[in-house]
Length: 289
Image 1 (tube, rainbow, N blue to C red):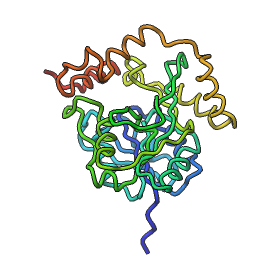
Image 2: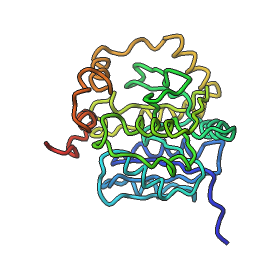
Image 3: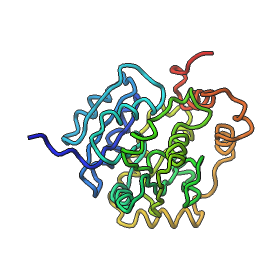
């Protein structure tokens, strides 16, 4: 007898940063919503990522490695969509973490009729130097940026509108383009007013893919697991502004590399993402002009 497929598929796209995988995967397996499969999909990984994933003793976890590097999560995400057996799709960045209630909250929202659900993400600066919450609005508007790690959607959404486009085909972020496309095709979005995701943007950490640290993920996961009031504390801390300020250098970098800035608008398709990859330490995979 064929086993019943899981209700939800989690997709983790990864590339040669095996040290963070035990933490992101642990945050998936600690979810209060357990009817899931986890597809960890390498973007042509050549390090020990496969061995790290295979060492995890949970039948819900599966490793897939693309034969060649695509250079963006769009490739692994599309492979995940092809392999997914769940009715719902969730994405988690390989260096991001979920709070245990993430999937339960978003799936509950979609059971009320939504096609796409998203919650609050805490964006954490290097060594906790800064934190802010996204999204900036509780009502989705076409063009809004939602981190993939905070989104769950019905599989029927991408069956209808198509999957992820390659960044070189776009003059905006692939995730921003996908959410906009889904909204314009009539799929209803729902906001869940809970903090469910912790994101450590590589774009705020120069050469992150060269250094490949994992100490931040380890420390934050320990806090999530040990502090019953973690969500309330973080929400209050950021709203109170006790984190200080974003360093001016980081502000300049963020403005320079943000979609919509005057410096970015004239760039050819995909150029911004090549600059971002170079900053994160992935320049050896950047296509030369």
